[in-house]
Image (cartoon, rainbow, N blue to C red):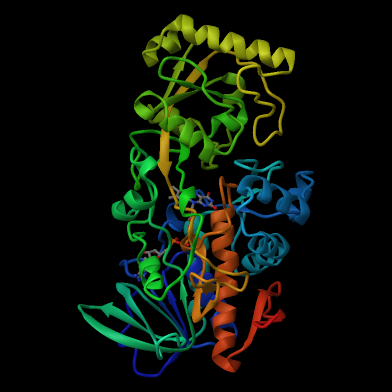
Length: 487
Ligand SMILES: Cc1cc2nc3c(=O)[nH]c(=O)nc-3n(C[C@H](O)[C@H](O)[C@H](O)COP(=O)(O)OP(=O)(O)OC[C@H]3O[C@@H](n4cnc5c(N)ncnc54)[C@H](O)[C@@H]3O)c2cc1C
């Protein structure tokens, strides 16, 4: 989708990165009439977004109400706080909880559709609204194309951010396109939406040495470029010590073909290669990811029976087990003994483990690991006793880096002293402060879309009056709750 020369006229907004955050920023700025350019370094848009399961965390939606799921902004906020822990940025969590309903409506108004609802990591009710990520990106791209003043440039890599003067606002971006470097001026601001660094071994060695054995799955362009660009200007960071992989990926998976199953949130137990449980399976899959990395060979099995298999949701990523069976990744056996033999475990150890777990289910108390629900303390535990039995070999995969630039609820990047860097905004996986210690499914895409939109609006507004800023946009239109930067 490469477009010719970018010309010499300044843009209102320059967006770096063509995943969900970048597309939402671009569309939001374009809708307001902004002259905006999106730079994507790869030949195609998509980033990690296009690889994702497409789950987005929304609360109190029509889909939830139809499914009799009681949810609210308050419950969402409570869960976000619980998974993030004490260091999370309350301002960001509140902004998301209060604004997610408007975001949901805005995305629906752009043609984004949600096909299913699941309960997953960190959610006390079913809150993961599942969309087809590729289709969502196509819808947003189609909307952007309606605005002639908005440009999308692939094969265009942001190389440097230029300020007007030392400590002055960010006013232009150096971009490498077609073998040469050009400088683009911007009046409002630059939105960094260049994703995380799950594909940068150098940064992972620096910030996440404990994840050395985790499989890497993420957009090929997610090498942390935006972080380097912002660090050079003195940007602060949040949550850098909180990078954790996700449990549930088959070890043979690659970025191009991955099969993540979360049978443990439907009732499976997790055992190590010896056939012994080692963790409360209802916790965040980031906690489970760390626990798995501490086991022999950094591998474990999800063990379940036909009762759990019957809860599988056809066509829903993470919860559809049949394709894994058809691809030969899921082991099936008529008895626990046969299953153990096929997985190379001692049958007596596995049987003893399952019987002890079942006894705990009967007694209403898991004496070994305190599991009190299927997922995040919710859902009744169920015995594993209905043959056939299944085993899914799993390990930990780094899907996202969950940490990064210090931003405020207006998506402004803050420097190491907490002061906004004028003209610099960031959204999506490049930002920190939101996920904290663990993770709620659907909040990576959720925060990318939400703060992407906020960033696009704010960067545009700055181009027009320099000072006024906005917190969240209105539902489908551009009606907005105005908030002054000085507030
Ligand atoms: C397998 C998998 C499953 C996942 N499932 C879910 C899920 O179901 N729900 C959820 O909430 N999250 C999920 N995630 C995480 C989520 O997909 C990401 O955190 C989110 O998509 C990040 O969006 P983004 O727009 O910030 O970045 P990305 O979508 O990664 O986009 C960033 C873009 O910036 C580009 N870029 C980088 N540097 C430059 C540069 N210098 N110049 C120009 N462009 C640049 C990159 O090439 C990339 O295209 C999953 C991730 C993976 C890998």
